[in-house]
Image 1 (cartoon, one colour):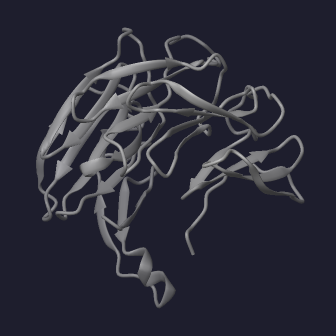
Image 2 (cartoon, rainbow, N blue to C red):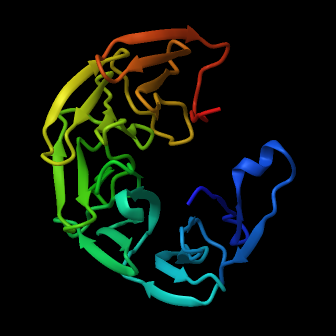
Amino acid sequence: AGKTVLFNDGSGLVEIFDPAQLAKRQPRVETYTTPEPHHGVAVALADGSLLTTIGNSESRNGIAILDADRREILRNEQCPGVHGEAVAAGEAIVLGCQDGLLVYKNGAITKVQSPDAYGRIGNQAGSEESDIVLGDYKTDKDAELERPQRVSLTNTTTSELKLVDLGTSYTFRSLGRGPHGEALVLGTDGAIHVIDPNTGVVTKKIAVIDAWTEPTKWQEPRPALFVEDHTAYVTDPASKKLIAVDLEDGSILTETTLDHAPNELTGVTG
């Protein structure tokens, strides 16, 4: 709904403001505090309501919907390890669980079950151009570091969850969406895999960087993907490069070498 929402894990404080006000003044900030602090997220909706995760310092298990007066009107606690969020067409909000996802759409919460008993989806990417959300997919609960090769595509209208085997692994910084709703995954083979979200077919592979290996610690730099309009930006910590890719024809638009190895990446429209 055009709002920026900050969620403070250590206190449970949620801060909501209009980012356009930052250009002129300190924005007016609306606040809300969750009953218990936790590693979570909040999303402001167009009707003034607020979605927040449910949890504490030990565990997280679902989401709650608060009306414009911040009174709870709906909740679902069938989402162990709730993590990550994405918004699809029609303001459908998807959050990952260790056994599937929760979808909040049109005033109702729907649980989408993974095909595996432990089928964790913790990172998602949505697009206003698509009813389908792209997510990661992990099945080894005891792995110190799982290197998955399948991604999930979840239809927020039909609740269908489809798995796509890429033939290469990827990480939590690998997911993005194209200008037409394409699902994009930066693989450890160094290519952007372009997936038709409706069919699950990989329609194109765009070679960008050399093959790489995910580091054991999640804090350590690894290639990242950020998409703005028709351009995909890819970081390569090994060469300290930032590369811009035209998603329409797959060409490298430009690249630059940075002073330091890049880690996280995001952007603004200006």
